[in-house]
Length: 176
Image 1 (cartoon, rainbow, N blue to C red):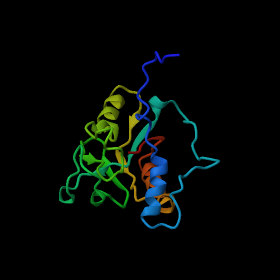
Image 2 (cartoon, helix red, strand yellow):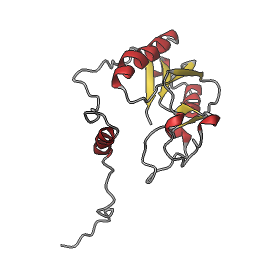
Image 3 (cartoon, one colour):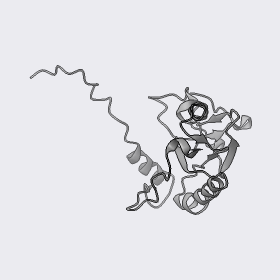
Image 4 (tube, rainbow, N blue to C red):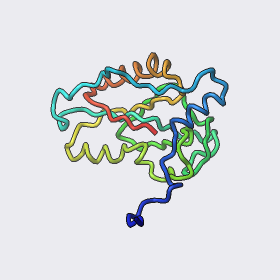
């Protein structure tokens, strides 16, 4: 039987980033491969009121642009120097220059040309103006330092505290 469906070629398969990440950790000298976080129970809860009446926060792993840290633009090579290690917040009424050169994404098959994919604040302002939700006064940056312990014990509680200060009802998490 001949193949009449226009499938992608066999070499064009999804990248095995989970396997690659495990192997990378071993190559870095860790004594065990990276373990992806997954839980039997999660603390997610349904909204207590309609989304249009809720305050929504943006939480991103994008880094603020740091001009002294080398190339961070679209197409930049992986740049560990552009990482950040503490939670940061910014005013949602203003524009911000965030970048993702500090993240290990597939630079061969994708680009970082559209900042809305990692930092959709302009679209969120537009949706808030349309009355779809109330936009929180601040957005928050979640560090990507590869430590689940630090994320769970330090960064997540700090982001939660800041969201509570802003009376946030829900959060949009935009990992990169």
